[in-house]
Length: 329
Ligand SMILES: [Zn+2]
Image (tube, rainbow, N blue to C red; front, top):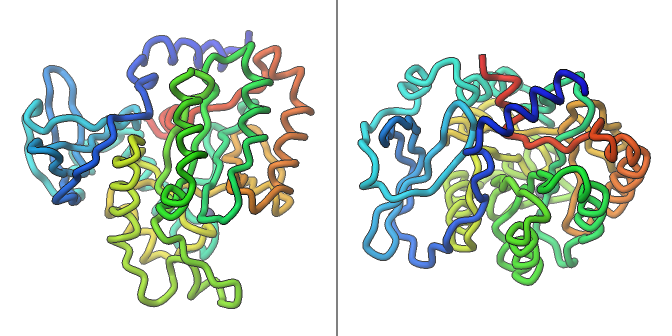
């Protein structure tokens, strides 16, 4: 067995917190949802709170474990809280995977397309699969999931995928969303939910520098925080990851996103654009029915790696674990 694989298995055994569920109770009456940064202690655990909200008479926090990039939603009164600014929190949690990944994303801020983190854990066989659910009138492309289940069923109990989800998609695709949630409950898959903004505006006639989130009049506060609330209303646990619509951003926008405590995730292998998946790639396909070419490419990729998958030589990685390995020093 290759050493890296052994290490991965050991990590999986010894960091059980990562297997925590990506689903939470649906919060149906959220009020006062806001950014709120505080170091949050509970027994021996040290979390960083990044959001606070009220629901049915209780105050809740969205917390990140800066070493593992794991998130949870929990009651505020269970924690000893010390409110802080995000900049101070980044000093307090210096050299954790979380802060190192934020810094790495900011280093890649100047590029108009594909800023942020574009690959993780290079030289490793296998990929990080990210599936974008941008607003769409079409039904979700379930072929991706069926193929992942079929190929990985025997070797990996819950193959991890990350799904970038937009607010409008959640609003218009209740049946598909419920199906995804059921796949998680049935143990077929582990999903890391990525914030992909609420409206995900796009105008095919406009230049990139004034398109997507760079379109004049964009309310970034609404795009980020409304999406998180929609996730919570639907019982999805927000991760610390963010994906720019169209992968388009500029430096100012990227810093606004890291200012929300979120790590922008790009892609070095947008399959429908002809980019090839390499070991450690963050692969991007669209699951919203709008990009069947990318899905076909992914299905061929899985087929070509079928033997390696069966021998556990080609794996799907959990984005949190990959970034943890890459940036925890
Ligand atoms: Zn999108």
